[in-house]
Length: 371
Image (cartoon, rainbow, N blue to C red; front, side, top):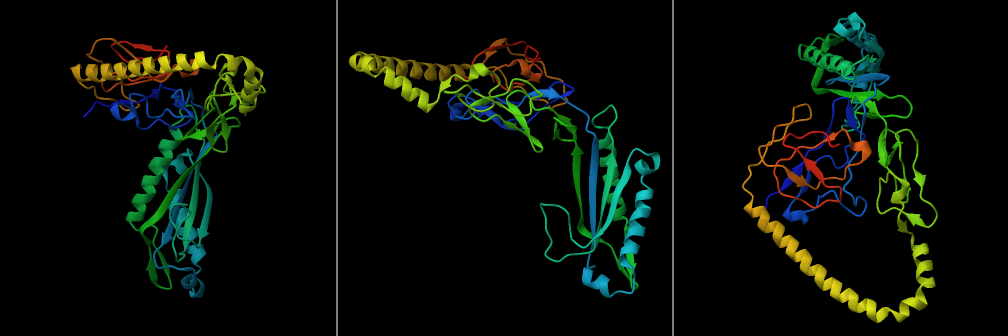
């Protein structure tokens, strides 16, 4: 069994990735040919998202829905009880007793009586049931997680009260309660213009990506984006395209399009004919030499890998301090360092080298920001 290297990138405090694409399960080893598994035709430089400054959301909203077991719209329609009024009064009482409502840190922006089992897009009920939908809103202050923490605690409070049957209602002398798995919760983030939602806060799309609806999309092939503020990507000059997606600079428009390549070939056609034999012989010699180098390098890496005796190192979660590495300083070819990635940190869990595009980054004993 060959050793596998895994990469765990994350950002400095106050920064977050503008996309979670490729962040999970970044690996290289024997099974990947000693290149990062996120490398592809679309991602030839093994790029990940950009660490961008966290922006406060303009508002965080929690949608909390509950449905009453066995209380269908048909049952409610033939009852002598004003079901809507009873549900609204019962739920409003519970909302008024919430700590965040009482101290003003959150507010009830909506309370509706519903005739569906859930508002979640993940789960649907075949038979509609009567229930309620509540929206609780909060405006973040200085800490991006302030509203999230408040609404999370409020959610647990509501769940506890459901378990205590405090949402029970009486319809024609029959008690109805929220059934098992009868609640759903969803969150919404209201972001300022030019930003997209990420978790419970907002971020700008970094170089190489642009905002589309609620997320950052990579610039298509043949375009690039240099900054954080542009709403769209810039096309390459005529006749040029990029090698992959997520290009961050006009210098990456360095690939001739098919039309341009055909024009060049047509202009050089006569000269090419006279040199065909020489080029063919050179190509064969170069190919044989290259194969020898590749095999030698592959064998060297495998031999060297098996000779390593340094222990594996555990990795920390996003909010933990990097562990000190006991192994000697080594060069480690990792995802290319760009100016906008200065806030990205990496943790190593073992020490064998995987190929990646330059520049090669020197890792000190203590993992630190790439500078």
